[in-house]
Image (cartoon, rainbow, N blue to C red):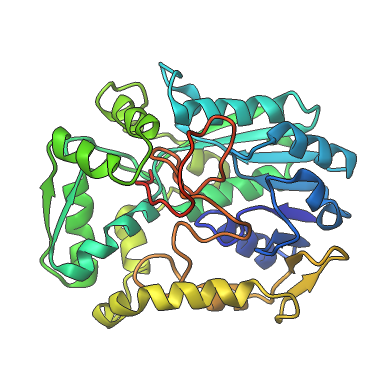
Length: 359
């Protein structure tokens, strides 16, 4: 049995779907009152029979989680980390919790693999409010090209690492096949949506003001250190995805085309309602494809092929959970994280539900 945390997230749901398609027994942690990754002991019923774990970083007690995994007989952990873990200057909030998470897993005695992707293509979701409002999108760091990666490609590498011992003790840098500026990504997205979209780069002052209105300053500083201090490299194209999976990583054009179906304007208007409905479909015990543990926590055990994606849908303009969707009570992710993260020891205090830019 493989245990997938963040199984309605951009990467986790792809891991769950790919394992299910391969016929591998898999369990995805579901949002309930009884299971909380910030409370390692609450996971004990869900860990019964589990041999490998796909793990997100930044929980309050990463060492406690690793200890629970080991006590349950887990043999292998694949951690979704970040390039922030190897930044040239790690004195920032994002690098701190990535490094802490990697250290906790590395010192656990369990076999481990670390995935360090560049920014997710699905971070395009942060443009949705502007796309609903019109054809102009403004964003920070308009002069920074990023070799962003499709979450499905991260998942493909994760599945390899979960199933094959050859990846133990390895840390993989992952990227897409090309480094694109935000304006280039928006142009590609416009073609997929059949819309004439225009990008406007924010000045650094405008970007700081916009980000600090919703994001703790420590994370704003981290984001600026990444892309103005150049302490992180998300421009280099890495061959890892092709080397490990035997095929090249998907292009942004492929990702945008896949996630921009006909009638996209209608889907833009309906996106919030559909994401909410999708999250609800997955959560309640007793739902088809969902089983309850003895503690009352719910998890998804081998959903039928196609049904998981039917319930969640693709990530951009169609149905599917927002980047902040999750199985347990989450706080919004800091800049540079690429996913929502729960509050942890390295995270400055912030109000639950505060939105922050993602990678």
